Length: 424
Ligand SMILES: [Zn+2]
Image (cartoon, rainbow, N blue to C red):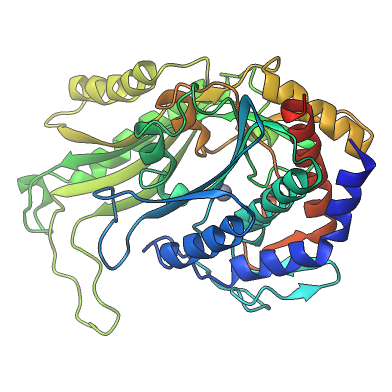
């Protein structure tokens, strides 16, 4: 990398800090999807002043979009002097709920001993800020570049990305004729390249029974006992099978390098009473019990196999349990995504990490999904990775922070990547 570009980034440390703090101070909580317009306008104003062309795009009609909580997205594009590839940095602007246990103001952006604290500091406003500093330093230092640099701030990643990247991909913004390289600065650590993620399948299973007096349960049919049988099948058959199924994907942490399933919730019988309601429960046989399952699957498995494995166990219970009936409602499904290690964006970022950090990168895959799925499946753009500062384990936790040095280092990597891809 030219020493001038590298020095420019180092000199803009205070700007990077202030930018990160500004972004954290927008409480872009999702749900409900707050302040999206305000943060998009902030990004638009900043990048317009640096000669980026701005598009503000509202994902009308997507889940959660309303006049009160419109799903706004921003795309900023700066074209170079000559034709060439477009490198796109995509960051989500939303953050998850705050939760308990904070010692810092979650929307204060406090800078303490080289760390900036706040909800979204790590996931992923620090990454967004680093990519902006990298792109600005690059276009200022290398004004004769070819191709284009794009930066997007998108909605709703934390709730599936339907009002964000999925919508933009459907509108053609991630068409491979328009964009050739995508880097998503999610917090995967500054020396790791994330090639993709596992798939996910979410479903609600309800077992049915018949209500009767609790003193004569034999006159009814207990839906909770039926669900107990379902859970026993999962324990005896499904969990051991999943544990034995390993993936070639470099998923971190290690525990996620196999198929997994979480039982997200369970509800049976009468609804929970309100806290102030001190009455004793009536004696009834429950006629319904529901669970939500969260099944994460590997690139070696297909969605159809994952579905069939669960429904096969449920169907088999009909043979062994009298009056066993169930309803399975699929809630959502996401396919795994995995970019080839030889893809141009992977090789370029790997070289840049080696230059900046002095050692080769670690290649990882994410246990949970992120917006790469939409760029891959809807956009049909395969040259996409996640690379950004921040410690993955801090995401969604109290006192989430991002280190300023880590942001600087990853901005150096991003700028070196732009230099390789866009300088003639
Ligand atoms: Zn994120």
